[in-house]
Image 1: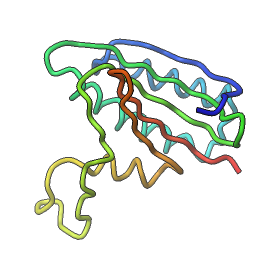
Image 2: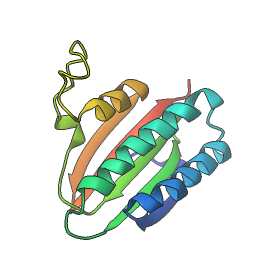
Image 3: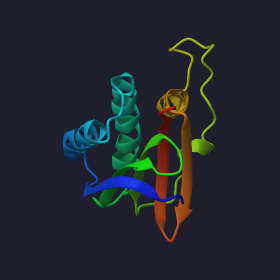
Image 4: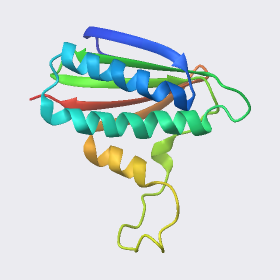
Length: 142
């Protein structure tokens, strides 16, 4: 991975009560790292989708941890967020995209949030290494 010029990390219990503290942490980092305002709503929506997936599915029988890291890429003008958990291996990017031509009533439940996260970010990636799920999304700043 490329070196990061500035970064901050928060680790907290992977439960719904942690959503607001995580969102506040990411908002603070977005301001500290001078993320342009035009990205802030996208950042909040993508963060919520991805961390709620961890809360809901990573730890089916206990509450584990989630870690969120915000950083600027040193080699490129990008603001990135990496979300880590140590739960069951799950690549959200493997999910089939929803058929947006169907009505809401006809559409299967699930998958729309990941689809929107892909659409709202400039890059979205997943890797599973050493029992760690890692989802990274970035916004290009150039």
